[in-house]
Amino acid sequence: MAKASAVASGELLNLDPKEILADDNTRFGLKDTRIQSLASSIVSTGGVMEPVEVELIQPGANGHKYRLTTGFYRLAAVEFLNKTQAAGLTVPAIVRESADTKSRLKRQLAENMERENQSPMDQAIAIKRLLDAGLSKMEVREVFSRPGGRKGNKIQPASNSFINMTLSFLELPKSVQEKIHNGLIGVAAAYELTKVPAEKRTAVLERAEQERQKALETEERDEEKLLAREKKEAEENAKKQGFQDAVTQTEATFNQAQETLKNKTTQAAEAYAASRQKFDNAKDKKAAATAFKEAEKVRAIAEADFDAAKKEYEAAMEKFEKYVASKAAKVAGEKPAKAGKEAKKVSSADVKKAAVKEKASTQHVALNAAEMRKVVSELTLPGSHAAVIAIAVAFQRCFSGEITDEQLRKELTKIVS
Image (cartoon, rainbow, N blue to C red; front, top):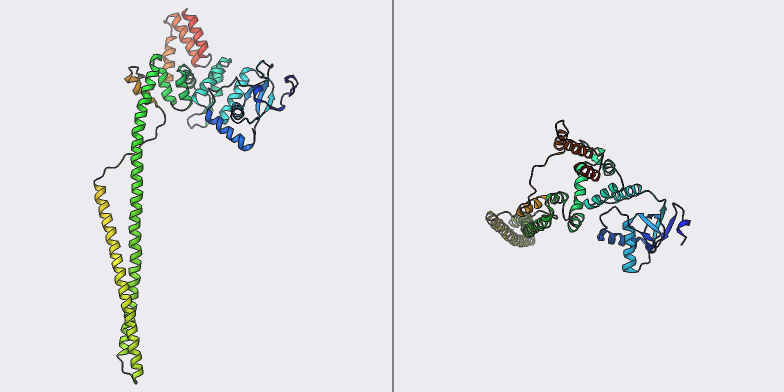
């Protein structure tokens, strides 16, 4: 292995994972399921196909010579394989020039947003890291730009409310954050929790989860009933189709037997008429009589076949009619079953209901952005106390993205102290 000082920027190396320090991620955490899925892909392809990116650092006592800038899941998957399967894999890595913290974080975040859907907690961590690195709130909003406008065809910076709401998730307990990260708690439900007093949040969430579990169990029972009903209906439909097929087949046989009997009867009648003619000699008369007997024998067989086909057709029709009548009577006395709805996570409605039961209701009439700006603007009018005006001006600067939440806190502290 070449010394770190001798490595040129842009050089592609195969590095021992132990040489790479992965301490600067913009995510809330890596998901085990994705690590294992990527590990399986690495095994099937014979290694990591796309290089990670690293920066040179001063070698430390722990053996780290490089800091990872992009490719955290790829590195984690290789480490997983080396640990669980003694794979002995290396990581292809491109060495980049050391960048300032802002640039590095932006690059990481851009790659994360391109490769996968970020969880709300991933976004919260990324926003905080960017603000801590010195980016203005407006710059952070631009990093999280999204389609907007009346028709959604214009890329616009994320709203202040999105930034503030997402950051508020960092105030929740770690256990709650993990559930948000794993999709067990929706964004709206998480935001409702931030409105609940801190000491009540755990109790409210537990009650909401209990209520949701009860609802899920009820829905699962309803779904099982629905599936059983659908299975029974499928079986009944198959049974009905069997009766219909039997009627169709026996009717076709009956019609064919009827046509055959008609033809054979005509032939027998013609043979009889021929046998009753005057003949010049006894031989011809005997031949005609024999032909009639044979024709009559064939007609009798056709008649027997007709009787049998008619009997089978009538029996099939009787069974089908009885089946239809019994189904009609049964359906008349039944009530339709309700289908269960899919629900996988705690909703904002669950949190609101639980908060009410825990006497920590989040129900209130919230001001929208325009109303809040109007209130703050009115506080800056002449006649207000100087400190009130200063506070309102500070809030206006924060709303406009001129200062961050942290800078606002410092200004407010300075005003009231």
